[in-house]
Image (cartoon, rainbow, N blue to C red; front, side, top):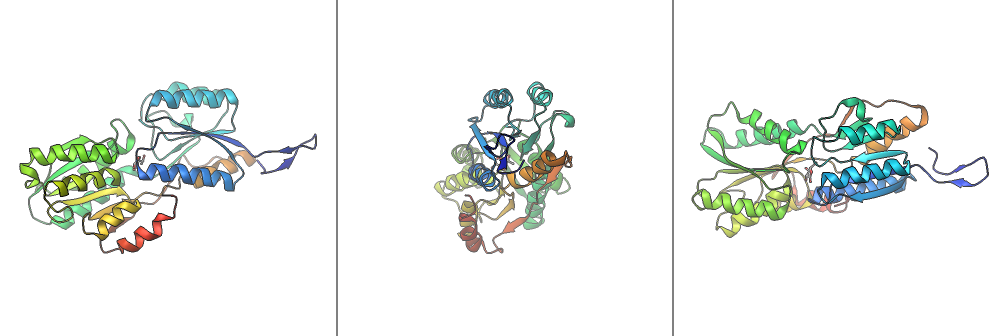
Amino acid sequence: AALLAVTAGGALAEGETVGFSQIGSESGWRAAETTLTKQQAEERGIQLQFSDAQQKQENQIAAIRSFVAQGVDAILLAPVVATGWDSVLQEAKEAEIPVVLLDRQVDSSEDLYLTAVGSNLVHEGEVAGEWLAKEVGDKECRIVELQGTTGSSPAIDRKTGFENAIKDHPNLTIVRSQTGDFTRALGKEVMESFLQAENGGKDICALYAHNDDMAVGAIQAIKEAGLKPGSDILVVSIDAVPDIFKAMADGEANATVELTPNMAGPAFDALAAYWKDGTMPPKFIQTESKLYTQADDPAGEYERRKGLGY
Ligand code: GYE
């Protein structure tokens, strides 16, 4: 696994080759993860084969099969949805190619991948829900929810976590919940329909969006409906991308839960140890989830984050 090793024949051998099956570029967070994965690979002398699946599982399965056929040294997979991976993961396993999952989980058995790097997605939803419960106190609060991609582990888990956090607060109710597919465009469109259905938005107290990009789209819709996001309608979401800090600095968003886009760093560390002497990493390498509100210098956070791969 050395970066440049002199082979028996005296030629310079390149570093390890890693195939990366990325979901697509649905969000600012996703784009940053792609940038950082490429950067991390370059710094470590890893040859990265990048494949963009344009949100389609079938494209990811085809990419993995082609990585296996090429005989890459490892595969990184950010799985768009949670189910349907057993056969292709089995094929990688039979070819003795370690697979590391990035940021989303699969329903497959643990022995089909080396490790998974990601956050505790249920906990993220809980942090968002706890923040909102505290913020609204005893008031009645009708919540609308923008879900992530249907069938993806973050959409499932962030919903569960949020519901856990509000279940003992009968004054908080989710009145509408629909997917916005983790994109700004759909976040805006679905929010428009929520606003229309809820008395022009006057009956909505808060928006919970499974990612910041959908929240940013929804904020636009709220403004166009003549209401003030951040005060007329509270906005809480997840990721901590620069644009949500800009919205927080402007008083138009209230809170976000941070998700690091640097999943590749820990993934490559685990692979390096595995390649070196077969060291088995833990099955789950958990990244941190930290809450940010308007009190946490959002203007400064915006500036600080702009250079970090976003
Ligand atoms: O929060 C969102 C995205 O898989 C956890 O995917 C990730 C999510 C992230 O596109 O913005």
